[in-house]
Length: 322
Image (cartoon, rainbow, N blue to C red; front, side, top):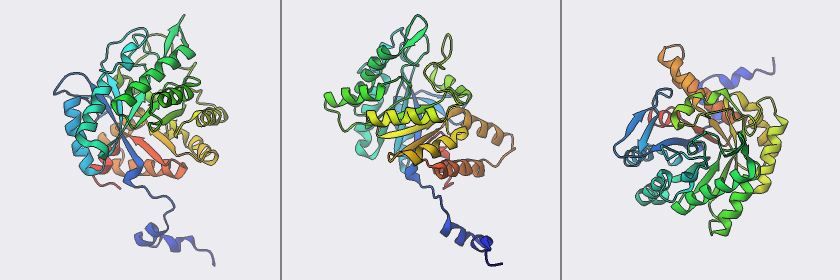
């Protein structure tokens, strides 16, 4: 035989040399859930190893992470006052604003802060926008979300990440940020966010369950791949700097299709349900956690993701899985 592909699998040295997909620490973003109070570290039952942190405790945990190389953080606010119109989401004294200021004061530019922009945790109905007659009103919601993005930029966020899936919100945010002198604040769009059952544990983490109905009128139908690309291309045209696919595990074809059709960086979100399934199976001894996690992360990168948002990030860094 002339063709013997196994020659290049002979040992680990040659396998590493020709590996087509190579992960590194710069690819990963770690999510945090920030809550009110002091000296608060509360376990999230559905997400083993993930916690709610008050700002002071998050600062200490982030310092430990930074020593390991965890320098890109995605922040979610939990525990703010919930109202019909989500007004606490853009308060200059919000938990997220306080967290941004505290992290930047302590670590300056050693840490890159990204903030989730969505009002589901700030509304008493749990939807990602303003309700009119039990329907999420798109344009009124966009105005609210743009204000939220601006408040995060004013606090010092490096990048905002709108996860609501309203039409036109990227353009509105870009315009408002630029108008107020924040033209260097980036936007990582949850450009392709599916209405997914994989978000289950996140509902506990963010206290964001819809009180009525579901999110299928604004989040995407998971059967639609062509529409997914359409959504992403609109966000690119409106000024997004990074395009994200969420969830990741069941949507690698979508990641690959997006990668083939944009020159922007592509991110994927390894979501709470994907994380929890691995943790649960590992605790039962049914899988090798390290090998499953790293195979999955490599799969995301092989599919075309430049950036991976994952709750596994701290394990990967702390346990030297890379």
